[in-house]
Length: 153
Image (cartoon, rainbow, N blue to C red; front, side):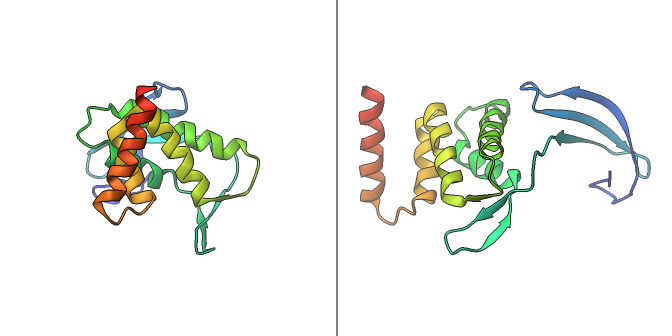
C-alpha cells in the first residue's frame, strides 16, 4: 500500500479489525519509508458496476462519491461517521444485489434519499436541494413542507 504522505510503496500492517457493521476490514498501517501511520479499509466488491449518468455518460461506481455527498449533507448535524458508513454501505449493498452491471445515477440518488430520510430530516433536505436542483427559495419551502407533513404522520 502506497503511503499517502511520502508515496513510498511499502507499508506494514500494525493492526487489523472489522468495522462496526462488519462490511470492511480496518487496517492501521505504518510506512516503512517515513514512519507515518495511516488507516485503510478493505471492502468486498461483488462485481464491476457502471453508473449511467443523466446525459448517458458512463463511469465506474465510486463509493467515495456517495460517502462524500452524504457527509456533506450531514455536516454539523451530529451524525456519527459510523451511521454515515452504515448508510453508504446499505446503498452499495442495494446496488450490488440488484444483479445488474449498470445502474442509473438517478436510482442511486433515490436510494441515498431514502436512507437520509430515515436518518435526519435536515440532511435529507440538504441532499435533495442538490440532487433535485432547487433553483429558488420556494423549492426549499415546498420540499420542506412535504417533509414536515410526512414527519407529522
